[in-house]
Length: 244
Ligand code: MGP
Ligand code: SAH
Image 1 (spheres, rainbow, N blue to C red):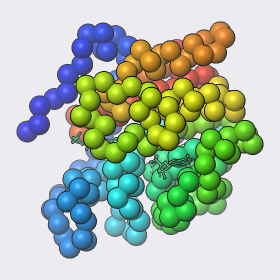
Image 2 (tube, rainbow, N blue to C red):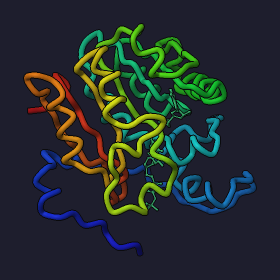
Image 3 (cartoon, rainbow, N blue to C red):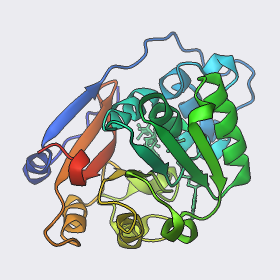
Image 4 (cartoon, helix red, strand yellow):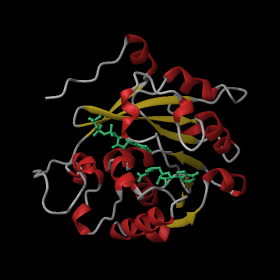
């Protein structure tokens, strides 16, 4: 069994709440002929945690497999929606987050630079019966941001692939295609209500500094996302959607 990940006392202090997420129990058998690559197999084994309706025709590509937000985590993030909220999902991927937002918020604007991801996200949203609540846009979030209006911006950009975890600390300049500060500024011009899904080894002091880019500083909440007893990622909430 893999060793539990341990946090320093300093990191523990930065977390206001630890949210446990119940995993979907399912017997797992590796390699059922679906032809997944060795790199993807580890994620395929977790497929029902990623999409509980995986067997109903969910479509994924390699980046989708290692980047999608597990369904129970995405559902928790979507709980931050408030009445009538329009959510902008700036990095939609295969739709893990957009689907859960569509189920709980008023409307979703789902953006991805890769047309194939948007095609897959649309297919996956239809399996969950929520595609009518989503506007899908193919484009670069940074170019589109000045023209977007919404109540919440959700940011789950590329972290540079699964090797993100090889570093002891993941700094915000490593986010793709632009650093975390540029990303945050682009979102802040739309709304102060921002959610960021970040690596579990992210530099939490840098994350806190993002809230200081506003005057007065934005309210901030940092949450660990735990699945099967393991920390999968960290969600940071800014503005009115952060719990005090
Ligand atoms: P992981 O660390 O690659 O997987 O990703 P796991 O199963 O924890 O592997 P282990 O070997 O560390 O035990 C954990 C989670 O992070 C994934 O389920 C995704 O939700 C998220 N994630 C990983 N990557 C590489 C990305 C990324 O590039 N972008 C986004 N938005 N999320 C990612
Ligand atoms: N939250 C998603 C996963 C996002 S992965 C899910 O749960 O499925 C990150 C996505 O960002 C990738 O699909 C990639 O194509 C997209 N991306 C990369 N650069 C982008 C940009 N400049 N604008 C919009 N999307 C971008």
